[in-house]
Image (cartoon, rainbow, N blue to C red; front, side):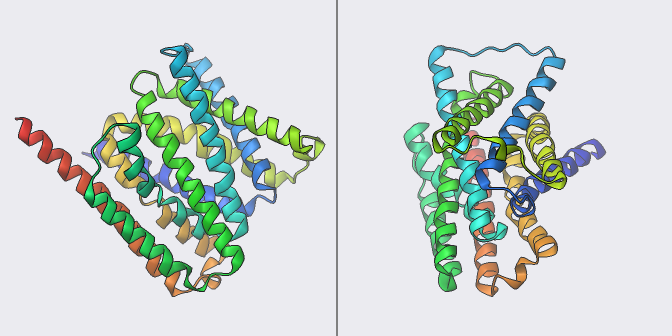
Length: 300
């Protein structure tokens, strides 16, 4: 029991780290694309070094699967760029709240991509999330509305790579998938920066604190967190992990209040809406769990 408790504490420590990534979007004084470029580079190198030490063998199930992983890598890059851009346009709290709506996108993407049955409960939960977002955005400025749009776009990209990865991980190692996706996202972002004329020495101009935060973001919050969560899924189960991850918005909002003082920028409507969205996301996970248990009992 004590061992299981340690695993739960470690899981929430990792989710807390993920919640901190939103804060880093404000603490690192660099453009959102530059932040993501460095994050991808550092995360790729760190994961590659670790896997080489573990004598990992590169293997993909098929060429078709490889092209699928490459496509998902593009979604990874787009998700991170839009996420950090939403943070810089408005607040870390708003960006992470938008990211919570990824569950809504998964509700309609899974029936299309995974050939799963569309669930009415997910549609209802989706409507509740939309209503909460409308309530939250009542007093927004034009910049906040732009941040809301970019944040929701980020959630869509996050749900796309989550759903596609759920298929890919059935035949390929998650470490292999992540390594390829990191590299693809880094490569595509580099091409974009070259095309814009922004791939120059300015990419390497930063303060010492920015560089240290980037190392923390790439190594600890990305590569290390990924490896730990993969192990925890095996020990605690996918449902426990996915349900616990719903605490990420809570951690980010608390950190944003303590570190960034965002409570002075956001009114009571935001926090009411945030509570509704987090409760809906958690309720969705619980409902899915009981539906799964019910389906298994019928097979017995």
